Length: 51
Picture 1 (cartoon, rainbow, N blue to C red):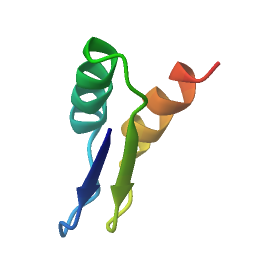
Picture 2: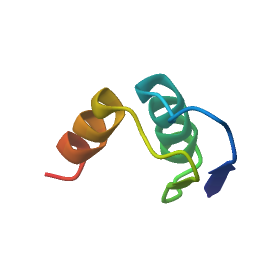
Picture 3: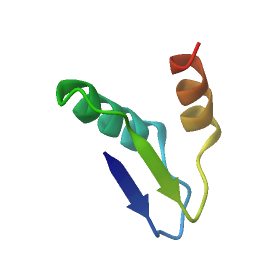
Picture 4: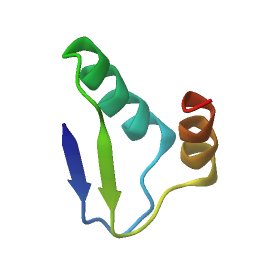
């Protein structure tokens, strides 16, 4: 399951968490692509999920 964002501001933690929740519910892997990058809280949260 993938999500592509082409927005003017970085993708937030909330958006990343929502995608993750949907992927878990559907038993899929989550991939996120953001042309504007990610906020520091989004990066920190995603990093913690892959430990």
